[in-house]
Image (cartoon, rainbow, N blue to C red):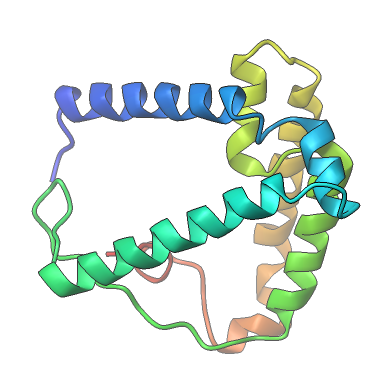
Length: 155
């Protein structure tokens, strides 16, 4: 189905609001992130635990009430098997997060807030994404998943 202009506008407004929340709550602060990785301050851990809780409750409610997308399609949450590559990928992700002070979503908030040096981080993230796509068929995980639209979406 086609997404209407109204839905696109709502998505943009929610994204802007979310970026403002990220900035005002200081979860994109390099100092907060640094203190988290050095175990100096529990603030970020509390934020992450809150996000996990909200996510778990949301998944429960989606399953319980058989929620649909804005296009009216049923949401299907597929189980994924554990793969050791997740540990390697998570470690690389964490190192990048610790060095740059940003994971993918907050990069946009940084740039939107005028922190234009984060364009370098954005370009690094894009480069990593394209390198992964280029080498995907040569990586060991390809036996259990192939990236295609039907296997990466929640619906």
